[in-house]
Amino acid sequence: MATVPTIRLNNGVEIPQLGFGVYQVPPEDTAEAVGAALEIGYRHIDTAEMYGNEKGVGEAIARSGIDRGEVFVTSKLNNGFHRRADALRAFDQTLADLGTDHLDLFLVHWPLPTIDVDYVETWKAMEEIYASGRCRAIGVSNFQPHHLRRLFAETEVRPAVNQIEVHPYLANDEARTFGAEHEIVTEAWSPIAQGKVLDDPAITEVARAVGRTPAQVVLRWHVQRGDVVFPKSVTRSRMEENFALFDFELDEGQMATLTALDRGERTGPDPDTFDFVPG
Ligand code: NAD
Image 1: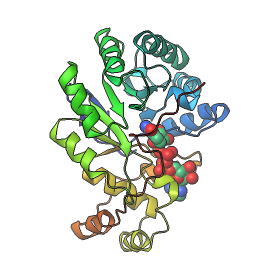
Image 2 (image 1 turned 60 degrees about the vertical axis):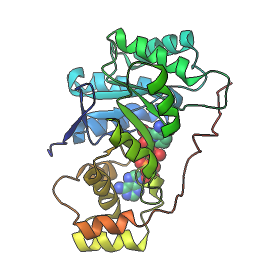
Image 3 (image 1 turned 120 degrees about the horizontal axis):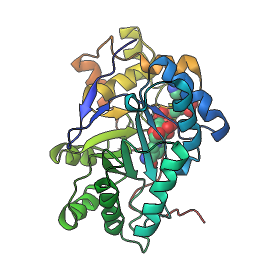
């Protein structure tokens, strides 16, 4: 089984650079999909309260017989729980649904800068959760540099990661560079743009040259740039394909070919305006 490298977060916690994402995995299929991922060798699962499938993730880990300490589990505070008391309760519920006494990483899912609850209040609640010792690291998702600057100015704990949309069609360089300058690891969500980049002729050409699939080439590009990725698939052969990234390399020219595909194209919402709160 290939060894997945780890990246050291700013508080010393090690995170496997490759994980398995479960966005859009139906709750009833989640235990099976995560079970397959664990069998293949994934030891990092990225879920969220918003995905409605934390129970399935917990079930799969429990059933696998793998020691809880060997699986890095991330979940996220849903929109709608940004007030302090709601955030503390939501964290407890996430632990209960996952059937665990701690998380490895807990993230604020979206900053929601246009709603009336200030994300600074939310981050202070995250700091309390961290201080309780039930979460090994805390971070954010979809935060822009100007949101992070406010956290730096008004709170104590620096986020360990920022999970943002990044793929060959969306470089998101400003946020990535800001993270690198401030010891915040970038986690690249939708790393293959939900499949949209896989037919790109420049990518299929590199794939042909290295004898790998387009998905492997794109995921390898992320890995070589130092970001954390957790591609999603419920198809076992694709889960295996997406896991086989550590026995080949892209050369500088091939890396540059993928980097040059940036066209500022989001597949998801813009963090500065996204304001969805579940009713
Ligand atoms: P992704 O880029 O991982 O693409 C997933 C889709 O690509 C699959 O549904 C499948 O159709 C296809 N696919 C996967 N592997 C393939 C392969 N080898 N060959 C061909 N097609 C393949 O998209 P995603 O699921 O949106 O993102 C990955 C993870 O990132 C999510 O599961 C979630 O954990 C996280 N995420 C976080 C946020 C956030 O706001 N923080 C938003 C979206 C996703």
